[in-house]
Image 1 (cartoon, helix red, strand yellow):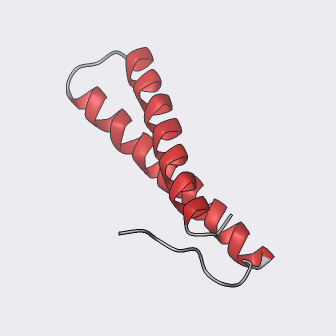
Image 2 (tube, helix red, strand yellow; image 1 turned 60 degrees about the vertical axis):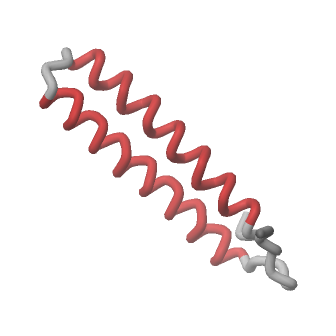
Image 3 (cartoon, rainbow, N blue to C red; image 1 turned 90 degrees about the vertical axis):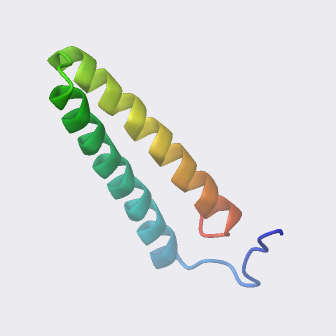
Length: 72
C-alpha cells in the first residue's frame, strides 16, 4: 500500500505546523526517555544522552513521514 502525496502543494502555514508537530513530538519523546532512564537508576549524563538520541530519532522519523505525505 503506497501513500500518495496530496495533489496540491502545502501552504506555508501547513509547513510551519508540520515542523512544530515534529519538534513537539521530539521534545515529548526526549522527556519520557529522560524520566525512564532516571527512574531506572541512570546518571544524569546517561539520561541526557538517552534523551538527546531519542529526540533526534523521533524528529527524524516524524519529519520523514511528513515529507512522504507532502507536508514539507
